[in-house]
Amino acid sequence: MVITFTLGVPRDAAPVKLTPVHDPERDEFSVELWENGQFAAAHGPFRLAADAVETSDAFLAEHGIRPLTAAERTALHTRLVARAGGEFRAIVMRELARQEDEAAFRMADVIEGHLRRGESVGWLAINVRDGGSDGRLYRDWLDARSAQAEPDGCTYMPMPVWPMTPDECAEHLAFVQQLAPLAYPYVDRH
Image 1 (tube, rainbow, N blue to C red):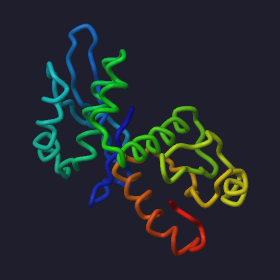
Image 2: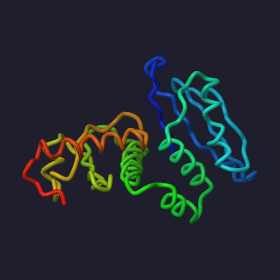
Image 3: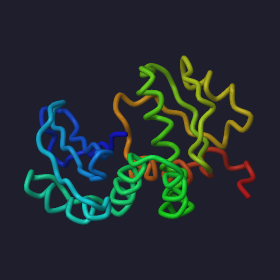
Image 4: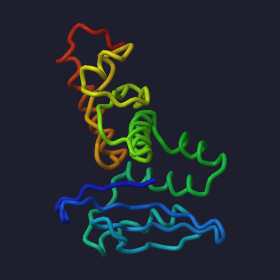
């Protein structure tokens, strides 16, 4: 899984990416930094995923990159541990993510899943409450909206060209939730 960070100053208009890595032979964790589509540096190895996360801000600062937000730190830790595999992943996802963050994590995973399958053209319908999707890409937002059982409970967006961070997804979902009463004033939201 890739966590993409948007920089304050674009570097050749390409995102900076952090890739969580787990070496199963040594049971060690590290983080790879990618800039402009090329490997830039590695942070690690560490025996614990938490150590990689706790020291990541200093690593990013050495490369002129902003520190991680709380949600990004949680996402990085969760995805490092998920790289180790097993049942532990599900436990970590449930325990680390707050209720409102789960929708953002799910939305980020939906987008990343489409990109992994090479599906990058079309419109998504994302459920605002849980961040889930029907798994389809639509020709336009009208097609996406008309295919939903609860069209007013979804947000519709063109498929991003790279993954969105859980923070970006949380901001998008919060914006849509604030906008919904203005757009659909007669819908019961309780």
